[in-house]
Image 1 (tube, rainbow, N blue to C red):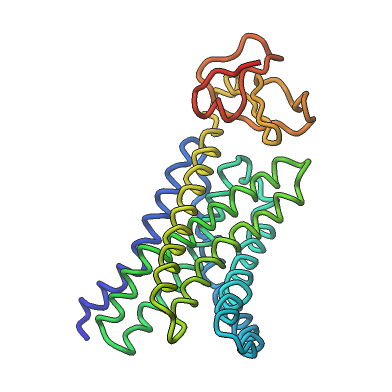
Image 2: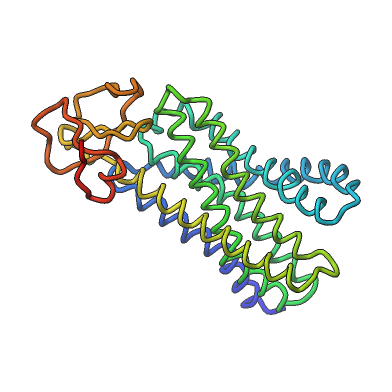
Length: 304
């Protein structure tokens, strides 16, 4: 095999990871996270693949006892892959990021979660792509193309979902445990569904009509994951407050959705902690509820 072909495969295996990392990092417009800390979190995600594989192989021994192919495929997707992988990512975030002083904005949770997720995805992708060389160069290239379009973004977007709820767990103390559980189980739901559909597709003798339905389900899962993740990226990115503009920041209650002026600490409606969102013009009445969070996003007027 020519060195140029190896480089080509390497670029396809690592390139999507770099592109997605750059996008998430650059969305943090005002207070970017330290590159050293991001590199550490990425590395932890990278090396976590080794213990995760050990755990997954151990779990596989029990899953292989399931005699029904469809149930076996679903168990592999959720219990054999999604749960151990997403748990490991959340464990890294909880033990290395939760109490870190750099974790001081809502959007930071997404940044760190995506970096740890793509650290794992990077080593996994390299193993799959170069493992494909055992068959042929064409096989390795096809694996690289498919994973660049679907698998790598899936890991990143599950990281977005994890980071979103991880941030709410950190800054919205009223529902800390609830949001922390969401940070695990929402990514598990998407990740497990994604993998389960692929494993169901590989069952021998699968009816063509069922295969068509599985492909539609696969497409629906990906579209739903993209839509949900983009919405949450925009949500938390909109809360970023430029340096020196704190006096112009509104406060949004993450629990009931009301938007208040910047000097309130707790929501008068539900007593939950209020989060910051930037607005170019300060409010005149500090106690005025101007609109709901949903109408704030869409620009609609709030009706009393």
